[in-house]
Image (cartoon, rainbow over all chains, first blue to last red; front, side, top):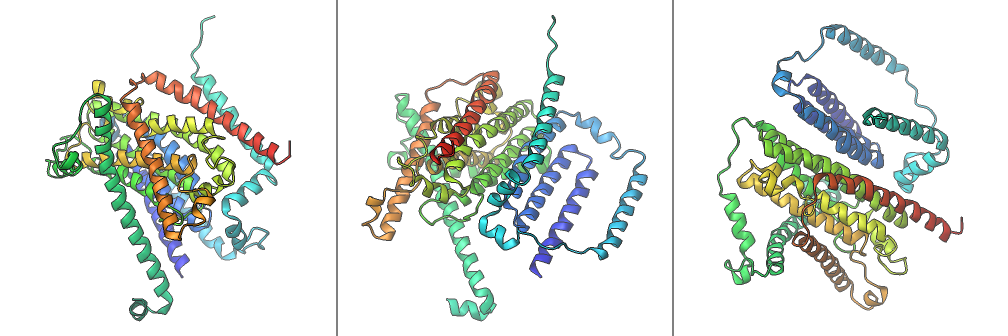
Length: 170
Length: 351
């Protein structure tokens, strides 16, 4: 009962906060609602026994990426921003597609069958602590995909540096 | 007591209720003692700086001026609360609360002596990083919502500074995590006992250096106090704040300093831990009291370092600040991680 109650709270809170993020006129207020949404998302991870992911969610998304969002948003001209329309003209089409997706998920959920549980059961993860288990899996079984992901990130960093670099006259 | 509780909430819930009451009492104790420390940290700072500048410091209120912090607190409480006309009101109210709350929340995962910690969680260190990154929001929002150019410049400077130095601070502690094999602060303190010198500051001297520099920048203290540089920006991000809202920024800053000092004491200087030959013959509570005393001495020494540096060094220029952060501290911290990893493998006989 209690887990369901918690899940219900987080599901409602995350959805409501996401709606608040996209409907605010003031972009800085949007960012603040998004911060609250990230904290709810982190609590959701905690609730799933994934404390490491929860901490990383707060540190990386709330602590670094969202601050950079805020940085950009702070430099906007607020007076102009408050007068422009919140949504583009095609928003009803987007709404229809989103509702259709929701309906198809809603109707297909009855045929959901949980897979057989593998080696990493809840008790095992709790006993070994989540961080340790995640590290072991990430650096042994999934080492190759992990390395590919980091190479992709490295390429994008180099791309950003190349774009931002000052052209030197030769 | 237990029987009354069982009668009220039923036998199944009685244990949970007792646990919650204990946690609440612990929280109240930590906040009360923490805030008293904050109050006297300001007195300590004024006295230390005064003597370094051949002055006497506060000495009028109470014996040796010891009641000065309370006089300051009462003054701040009863000051008029002024809000700029074009300020963004909700965010203006929210900013000091975020700043102060994130600093106070950090206290909840610090173990003050063996077995005393409000929340003994597996990811203690990561939780501290998360809270310190949340504090940046208080600063940025206060700068933006005040609708004043000095506050705005201070807020922007502070945000970029805190983000840059958070990276090097996180990386400087990775060496400690690798040596201890845990994020839990109590485990980190216990792990230090297994190493020959009993403190991580010696094998992790590079990490300790990076951490100390980053801690100064994280808490916006001299020589990195550009966000509130008085000679350029009046008071930086909290220029427009007065009365109790200003006091919250002030208290948050000193709480942040105490938290940083505690992290340094716990992760690098051995925390409450004492050699086994000292604690072996002592009764339990006396060993714990001695441990608490040890921990506090280390925290006060680190606070003294803050004041010492403040009255010694001039302020850095902004580009120098960024250059130190990105071009010196981060490479040093990354190098420290590699060295620690190689040394660990070598000791295990894998290399």
